[in-house]
Amino acid sequence: MLDSDPLARRAELEPALRLAADSAMRFLSGIDRDPVRLAGADSTATAFDVPLPENGVGAVAVLNELAEIGSVAALRSAGPRFFHWATGGSTAAALGADWLTSAFDQNARFWANSPLACQLEEVSLNWLKDLLRLPAQWAGVLTSGATMATYAGLAASRRWWGARHGVDVDEDGLAGLEPVPIFTSGWIHPTTIKVLAMLGVGRRRITILARDGTGALDIERLQAALKALGGEPAIVIANAGEVNTGLFDPIREMADLCQRHGAWLHVDGAFGLFARLTPRAALLTDGIEEADSVASDCHKWLNVPYDCGFVFVRQAEFLEGAFRVGHAFIGETRLDFSSRSPENSRRARALTVWATLKAYGRNGYRTMVERHLELAQHLAIQVDAAPDMERLAPTPLNAVLFRYKPSGVQESRLDELNTRVGEAIMDDGRVYIGSTTSFGGPIGFRPVILNWRTTEADVNLILDVVRQVGTRVAGMYLQET
Image 1: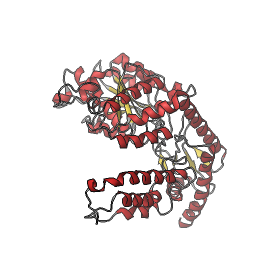
Image 2: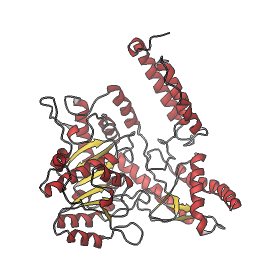
Image 3: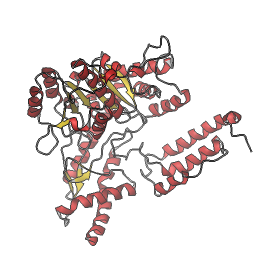
Image 4: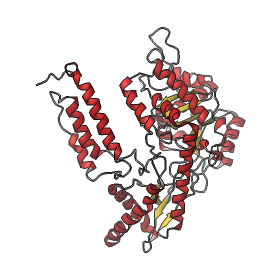
């Protein structure tokens, strides 16, 4: 029996990496045509649930097992027909850089930890500001995703709010202070609500200023709410790309009101921020450049591997003050990204961001975004023309909200039918578009087109699958009822 000590088995490194690369290529070679979810994926995944071995089997054996079982259990979420949860893919440059990120194994904390990671993060952040036409002087940091980017941006806003009251809330806390007023539309994302709880601000401090049951911001009510504060500070959250519809709050008007009344404007642009890449959608994002903080994802429309997001803040001192670290090391201040983010131990995410931006540039990303916008309109036209489908919202960006509405099914039964159809579509696996609801409206589907691999043929499959699966499920459902 070989010694289980990794040092004794160091000769496995090269064959293990070659095996991993070969297995990855086999997996990716079929990703354009494979079902998103293979039959038996759930049961196959349970094969990993065994007792911890006393003696390991070695790197080659375990990677063989992972590749064999994992290739069946893994969703093809990096493929062209995964339209659920606003998931992007991984460009060739980003995926290759991600492999190197693991091989280099850098801690992107500050310069002495990794000059490579810190330099590439600074360059990547500057390139993102350039790409997205954001002010060059804004401070930024890469995060694990839009949730932690929002956390960082709103932590900066909390610090600003405390400073307006003469209190350093990061040193002294919020105790004794009045509640923080938070204003937004009904389009606020659940992760933003989660973040406000994590920050100690509280979920119940959010005031939703919506109209007509659509979730859309009532700008007059926002103006009245800010005016009523009499100059006291408040935090306003604008939503750039509502999760089900891709709709945008009126960011320019919100920015003007915030400047007039002395409020902080945070923009959640998890995928909608990338609308700024093309004149076809840039007007939706007008005013973002006047915000105080902006959060977004890279593992959505930038198409880098999970996990990666970013935040920009207009005034660096509020971001850095919120995450200041008392280093025990002397002189470690050059490009200290741990003092801009919640993490001290930080994966070198910048390698993937830098690589994909360098590989495809401004024109490559603009072309991709415009193709996705065209595909979304193509699907919306198909839905509108189909007698058994109904579009449930406008399609300003890359999300199409619709439902299956076959003849002979009463309105009161459509929500349950579409829920069942959504479950069956995910089991079917040819496309991935589970059911959703928007602002208490009808239950339907909202495919989001974000993946660089997605073509018109992939989008054309959506209604075919909904109709085929829907016909079968509707027949069974009507028999039951």
